[in-house]
Length: 319
Image 1 (cartoon, one colour):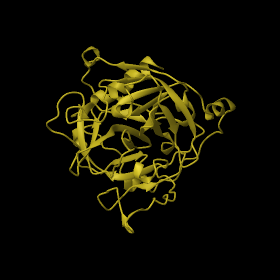
Image 2 (spheres, helix red, strand yellow):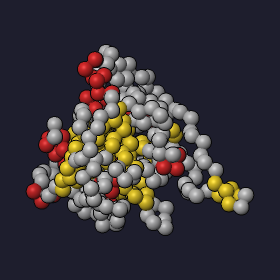
Image 3 (tube, rainbow, N blue to C red):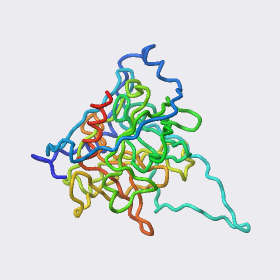
Image 4 (tube, rainbow, N blue to C red):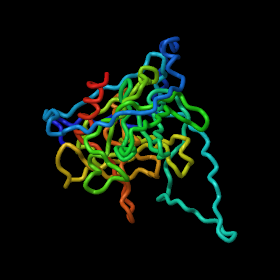
């Protein structure tokens, strides 16, 4: 989406990679440590928003993130070892049931520094899995098709799970979306494949949250973007990141929701993963992983001004 005025590009990776870690300024308070435990919430409410009744302000939104004073700021996450994949054989011959367009540029990481510790694993009551990111004090951005819209049973959100470790967990109490997508996105719904979950606990106050801003078509085909999430082919229990990926807004897609293609390496479980870049020392999300083209090699993301409007309304209605 073309913004007003000159295009403001995010900070280049060549500059970010040389920056030292900005250490935390204070320890975690006793009050914030109380949010580290697990909680039990069984149900939540579903809410579809009326786009026609929403704000028609044409100015692209820029919603700031939050870094707690006790959280380090890291521009490059600490790497971790990949899990050993299970071997599958048929009549004594090894077979590979999964496919990645090589080279696979995803890197497993274990780093609770901001913003890498904002990554979320999403689990539905039926055992469906997806990814997301803290986008507000009690708000998690994910893909709409990662939500089980057929039940009132709550989704479980785990903040930065890495194997047997996770920073915290909470259930959602409400879910907001413009389009309820059940069973996977299609060509007609890829551009609105996002939802915001409202958590029972203000985990963002503890771990921080990312900012959100409207994608600008002037950023097309530039390798600014980073994506984090939980790929199922690596077991779905360890986060990966991939940097230097591009987004390309579909020129035939009109309106507030926009579909984009990407060269990111993606597998099941990474749906809902954020695409973000850095503007100086602040990360902003512009899109989420949506789906892949069946029978093809194109991965799709979902963004546009409606994404930032949705996050803005979720923050406003559920502070």
